[in-house]
Length: 78
Image 1 (cartoon, rainbow, N blue to C red):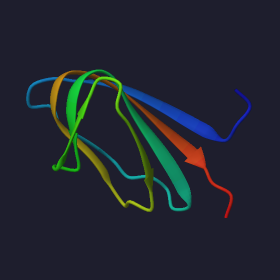
Image 2 (image 1 turned 135 degrees about the vertical axis):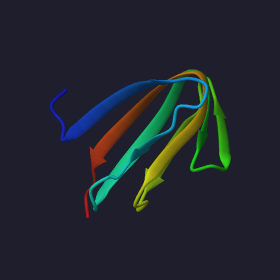
Image 3 (image 1 turned 90 degrees about the vertical axis):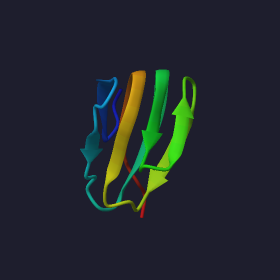
Image 4 (image 1 turned 45 degrees about the horizontal axis):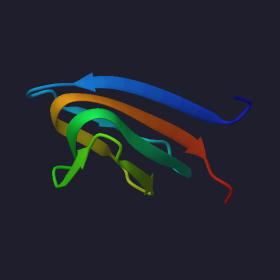
């Protein structure tokens, strides 16, 4: 892959909580590969769900239930 992108992968289960503070002027794509997780304390996501994120100072994941999550941190144009 020849792009300005970073890929993060994590496993979340039980009471695991995790947050990510993206750099300004970047966008993120969150993909739930397996299990269930809650995004920002209010959005329940399940296996196969994906979310486009932009202009958020913090991305918080919690209430993981055997979750395998990928976060793509992507450059934006303008």
